[in-house]
Image (cartoon, rainbow, N blue to C red; front, side, top):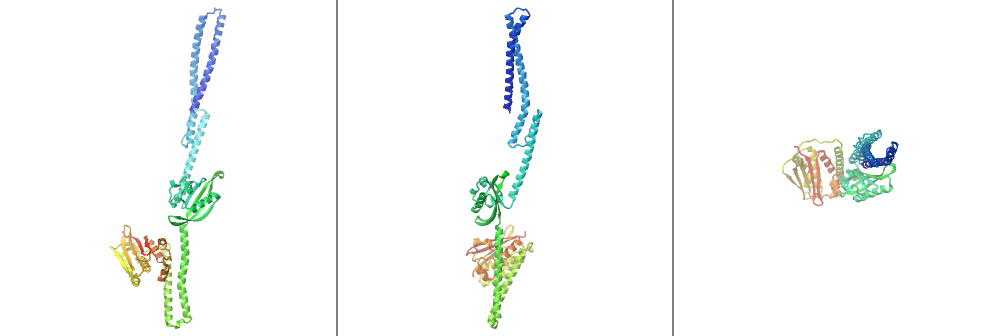
Length: 481
């Protein structure tokens, strides 16, 4: 705008100079004619020297007048041009600021009504853009908060296959960082192949698609419910695709546990009922006449009845423990006293297999717990250790503590547990060695009851095991401070 005003001033100056130059030439040509006419009318003899002297003075005065007029006109033109161009320069500067995103800029130009109207229009535009920018920032913040706090993983991929939006759930689920995925092609992120094929399908069909896929992450099988859809902007312009993933691994696991539970409880109930029914029918058919056979069959019926009763009691116990709102009677409790009572209960079974206890108790620890329930926990654990151990082996019992928990360890020298099976040992009816478990008369609910009782005490349970060497169960109960 400044160069324009300079050009305008130069142009105006050249026009003025040209006009005065032409005017000076015309006056310079007419002056001798008027002087000669003056001498002729005045009857004065023509004097060449006087004529030259008057002409010289005339040209000097004319030049001075022209220069003064040119200076005054140039100054006036400069002021006039500045009056017109300065407001326009200010408005232009404001428009440039708006174009680079500075919506706080305002024009303060004064001048003719058209300039003032233009200034007002620019300022109104700036206010409107500033309000739009604030609204956009608020909407972006809301969208960002929504995307980051949603429970599902989300990723948006542009038309070229590059990642444009991704939330923390997605990054955390696939062990990625934002810098590793920003602007990168989704095929270069190392995503599971099934997920890449799903994204390719949405790209190719450009239509919504839903599928349950199974992916392996960190050596673990996870199940994802994936939904993909194209993203369409204004005027039907295709912008890319958005993928939303919801982790349903826990739901699949619970459904499998439910199916296993129904199948197992049916089998566990059917076995003793079949035995009772079969032996009783045999007796009714006439076998009761043989006293030896009668006593043998009645003993089997009695054992199966006890097994059935034990199973029903354990089911009722587990149902009560799993009920919402179940609590235990928390009082200061000696772990040593609890462990001694559990040892007394399980000693007969220990003697049957010619096993022994190795007790390692440096000092007693008082915890916040329900004595009866703690006895139930350790009795189940010791009974399990006896069941899965060979004869003439040792079960080690330890009592320790840390800043938060009293710790009881039950370690055996039994068959051990495969690492892949460790996460499932606390499921109802889950058995590591099914043949040995069924022969031992157990219900398969002991560890499930132990887990729920430990959680009811706000404690923790850890398991370490090596196949063929044994298993160590670690129970942590909050200490009384």
